[in-house]
Amino acid sequence: MRFAMSYSCGKDSTLALHRMVRAGHEPVCLVVMVNAAEGRSYFHGADGSMLDRYEAALGLPLVRCPASGETYHLAFEAGLAQAKALGAEAVAFGDIDLEGHRQWDVDRCAAVGLTPCFPLWQQGREALAREVVDAGYRCIIKSIDKAALPLRFLGRYLDRAVLEEMKAAGIDICGENGEYHTLAVDGPVFQRPLDFQTGEIVDLGSHAVIDIH
Image 1 (tube, rainbow, N blue to C red):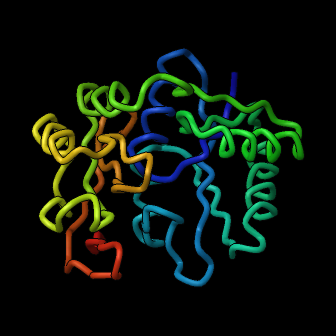
Image 2 (image 1 turned 60 degrees about the vertical axis):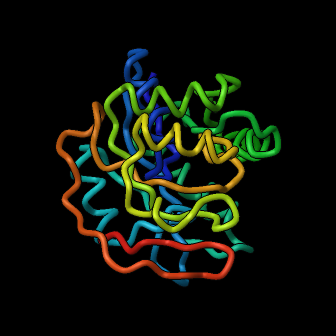
């Protein structure tokens, strides 16, 4: 089956892509939602230059969908229509267990006539976080909820030691409650690693991010 990957640049969508490819399906493109006002991908904050790097590193066309909050669903559907024109029959998502998110995805796919796929659905949050690490993916912590994690986690790679520290802190180590977000920068589905640098930490009040460029 030929599919488009709804891609956030983070660990969960990267693992979903990994599983789809291992199952024998053929990816035709990545669909990435972009905050039109900021010029960065939603939730994980990859800027335009980094999105170019993802396209090259993963060897897949990247369909960018600029949107604001009010037009988000329409922009995503327009991106899915582009994916369908590229030959996609289905769309894969990295959702794990939030039913409202899954239904939103299903509705968007129905609007353009594509089949939704959820390779991580109901697999267990902790098991999935460990699978990302054990599969050989390098995911850098891009943002944190300061109520859940200290600033020292920013810029660190997700690995077994970090997961154990998160577990000891009493948070969901998969970060599904917004405790942290990652950018995947290398691993089995990458044709080459992303070349990047980390910059300053920016305090946003309840959250903090590290500049990655």
